[in-house]
Amino acid sequence: MDVFSDLIRGVRAHGSLFASSTLSPPWALHFVDGAPLTLCTVIDGAGWLVPEGRPPELLRARETIVVRGPGTFTFVDEVGTTAEPIECGEDCATPEQGGTRHRLGWHDPGGDAGGCGDGQVYGGDGQGYGRGNGPGATTLIVGAYPVRGEISRRLLEALPVVLRADDGGASDAVLDHLAAEVAVDTPGQQVVLDRLLDWMLVCTLREWFDRPGGERPAWWAAQRDPVVGDALRLLHAEPAAPWTVAALAGRTGVSRSTLAKRFADLVGEPPLTYLTRWRMTLAADLLVEQHDATVADVARAVGYSDPFGFSAAFKRVRGANPSEFRGSRRPSPAR
Image (tube, rainbow, N blue to C red):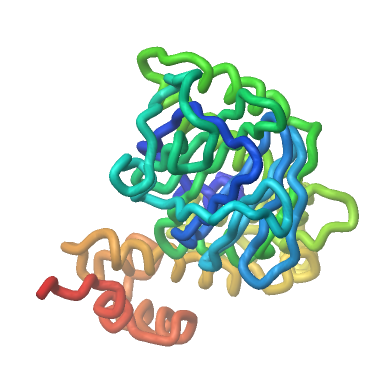
């Protein structure tokens, strides 16, 4: 397992609703959910994405922008539009709450031009699709992603509030599939669209990390080093193994000193320090997700035979002992 695959595995589209609608100017959609990650792609036309507290970004056909929460944003036909912003979130799937009567590709050519209130669908995860079919209309795909657990939060920490992927590259093929799939109403469409959005997000992030002159996280570049990349893959594939620098060096085919220096130079910290932080990230998710697991169970799962040693390491890295951390993440009882 490589680092990126591990970090993005908790970011998944699920159960979104899609529909055809006309976004003819003037229009303004205010995305109020503040999702951890929101992907916005224009198929046809253009519009302006206005993030909270940041300058507007022009989004042309076949361009993609990813917005990192928790701030909200507005998508408009032009900066300073006269359109009254329509709030879009979970309630947009309900006609009574300003939602749509057009679902899963069905479009009423006789419907009035408008924004979310006339034909935009958003599902439980805040995902939606807008399709323009009039003069100056815009076709917009939006996918809002929940981010589950501490593992995927490490990916968020590597991203700016707004990142852009211009047209071209691997994402173009995904856009073609998205446009074709949303235009028809066939069995299994929901699953296909969810997975296409996942594919689009992965392509967008990879292209952004690989852009020339970009400020990519250390682990991204380190993955491609023939020595350190192998070491990272081993640590992520076998995090509970009794690793030493010597054992890791033996598996990667270099001397202990070579691995230690090269790893620290490229990743920014020694191999076993990286391993400890990664184990504590895994443990944090296990403590929250596996309610019946004891602290000793979680300790063994991440490579510690001694729960006291594990608890000390967890508190040093996370700032609280395992029991305190678990209690702070437990939902408050309903009143």
